[in-house]
Image (cartoon, rainbow over all chains, first blue to last red; front, side, top):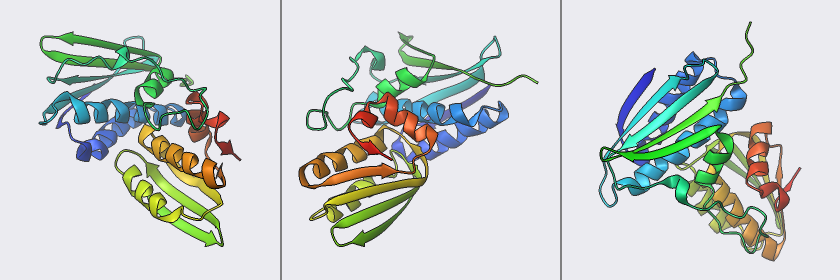
Length: 140
Length: 98
């Protein structure tokens, strides 16, 4: 298990990605999964940085661990900001034409699509977001 | 991220290498704002692009919106991982990927 407590500002994104990447390397995470995990971590961390403590800033606590059944990794994010369930928002319509599609709004949708499980709860004054990614690691 | 550009008349190719993420996307966005005027053919060369997040997709979508009005746009040489992201987000049905 690896933990990081860091100020939730966009300037720390590279540090967060480096922290998660070092965990994934220790876990021999296949490259195929690595990028989708990095994308999900970026979306969630940037969301906290942009909205959780607005207009101020605060901390984010990130925990990376191997799932108990050894075939997945779990990453959780905690912040003490405003209660906000990122999963509550409706998914964007990805079949719209170029003219009709909004420019953004894909972040959380990408997390939902690329992770095998996502979970949000507000508990003891904290937003807790957990995601799980199954690994296609080949056992020797 | 490194941005390299090659312009030939009204055709512009933008070569991206490294990571197109929340930190680097604003840089590409401002480059695009300056450069797309009068461009009829825009190519994004993704051969050395290692990573793209929603912040990067946002810039690609704005470029497509501009180019739909004034010409054509194509994305080339994307890695399998980047292509998968284009697939999941429905980008592959509205952006030409070669």
